[in-house]
Image 1: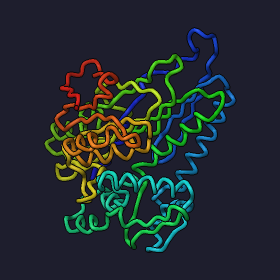
Image 2: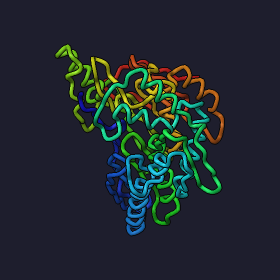
Image 3: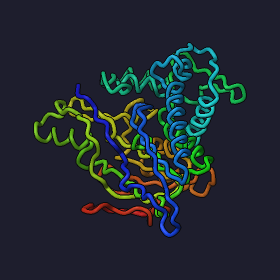
Length: 382
């Protein structure tokens, strides 16, 4: 069995300018890298108070490490999620942050009619995706049994007391929403700190949170990865298969980034991308990725290569990018049309199909441009 590849879904194309034009005030920039939540995060803040910027980074790092300990599904002694998964049906008291995030996640599961379902962790484990090893393709009978255990409506959460329970044998994981939620909390910290004017929070490349604009007042320019381009796991596996005639021998070697499809301008908003190209493996000439359809407990085959969601809330972006990938283009567009004018769920998105076609919502029509050398059909939805 070959190893999967992990790489950046998004990349920041610009650097911070260090002086605010026209006013003479010196703007300082401080950055930190944090290895947590199974990824490398880069936090960059700027403002007029160097000490305040440094304090925000220290506090942000501490918060991220603390959330990782309590939200991990893979065995941390302090993890609320791990304790819940191994409680054999008994109620478990959750920390305030865990209970809040679980409640928000369950709300998103309901909003998407189960296209996002946080109780699919047993299936994720069966495929071998946690820890990026021991990959396997479960037999159909096993998949049927796993799918029967996926049902977010069976999670019991007392939102007042913070106690939760699962049916014995069910496991949940908050990874589909945790980084987006963390971005929301870090953004609030930045906004509430005097002397800190803004931030670019790169929470593992697939999730980006911006606070304000760049120091010169212009929008952040974020690169959108081409899911079918060079440097992706899918591309490498396909190329290896073409060379050897045997995709099962294709190693999924990690690269830093692939080619860019386009650039998205972003100001004071969040974005998240989900795609099958981000983590996958091959067996018997078939490529399998980590985004599972809760109805089948198998990789979602929706006709989409990736989905990028832009909204005010990082948690909404994170959860919806996964859900829309599972839904596919037609259902995803219908979902957007249903909720486009709802103040608590309003979002924009970019769908990239398996054939490379690009569909984007009108709110991104002026913010998205194809990268140099890219020639794609781009359709603005209505």
